[in-house]
Amino acid sequence: MPHVAFVPFTGLRVGTAEMLAFGMSLPGLRDRGEALRELPALGLLTLAGMLNEEWSCSYHPSASTSSLTDDVLKTKPDLVAVSALTASIDEAYRFCDELRTAGIATVLGGLHATVLPEEALHHADAVCVGDGESVWLEILTDALSKSLKPYYKATRSFDLAASPLPRFNLLPTRGVPRWTIQTQRGCPWACEFCGASRLLGPARFKPVDRIDRELTTLRTIDATPWIELADDNTLAGREDWSDLLQMIEQHSIRYFTESDWRIGENAAVVKALAKSGCVQVLVGIESLAFQYSGMGKKDTQWKRIMHAVDVIQDHGIVVNGCFIVGADGETDESIDRLSTFIAESNLAEVQITVQTPFPGTALYRRLQKQQRILDRSWSHYNLFDIVYQPDILSVDALESGLRRVLSDTFGPTENRKRKRRRLHVWRRHPMLRKGLR
Image (cartoon, rainbow, N blue to C red):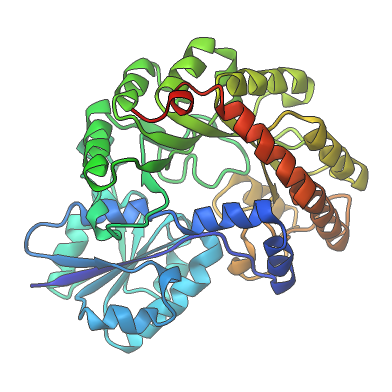
């Protein structure tokens, strides 16, 4: 029986050892980093769901073992499917090189490989460009006949109505802190910095019955699953949100997702979101210094944004406000203003990252044209290391400012304050107030 091994290179990474040590000293950053590292790789689990009975398979999270290559080789794979983000692509390349030395065929996919397939092909036998589901069966057929092509690219975006059921059973039967499902792929907006909204095609929505099937399956594995929606912007562009939220409500789950702050301006949506089991939502507030294209006229509506945040939290949903440091126009004064803004806000959770021009984004193309991209390895494209020349500050000054706002925001005192605020918000949540049904 032929065998395929799935190996995801996921989780939060920091290229600079000093920044890693700094981040680990801040409880808020450390907790989120650990949560990201524990998230299952939904893309590979979905491809596993397309295997027929002829194939056996195994799943090998890259962070789970120090002997990854040996563990994979023990399965005697006919093919190893690897996925990676930009920050982890160098690790994935080294892993593929080791397998190539051992004579094992590899196929590499993910956002980075989609943008830079020629680079990826230097390390893998084949590169999947775009939606993996569209070409996966062809890849398997060619792997069996040992005739893999260099590139596999779908002629059109994958129809989520044909979504296979992810192989959740490849994960440990116990101790999975968070499960992942996807209700839509892509985002209707086109924010300059976003590395996911359009790289895999236009925004598409998974039919409610498909999502229902996935949740039903998860409930047979975990009676009280904690779920993170692997969506770029849940509900954005979805005309009929009521059927989706009513269906999710029937499963009595708790979940985290990402969405647009504007949901806070629709009380019916927020009420239904809370009833469905959403307990936390990440919203992009982004920069106080710069108006990104695709984000709308944010520079004149901070009160409007924070009012929407209050509405969401009044319904028992914790808002994780996401901010970007280092956009054009950033100064020492604007960074200090951000620290004050966050400290005085009612946000129950906060995420702060440095502006990162991921390859394939409009931001990368603009900074590259301006000759502002620094010569740093891909491992530094991790949301905390600086990989471009700021327009006003020096690199060292921006790095110092980033550490300053991180220290101000994620130190013990502020962390305890937000923890109390989260508990206060959750006391208003209809599900948490009365317990899971």
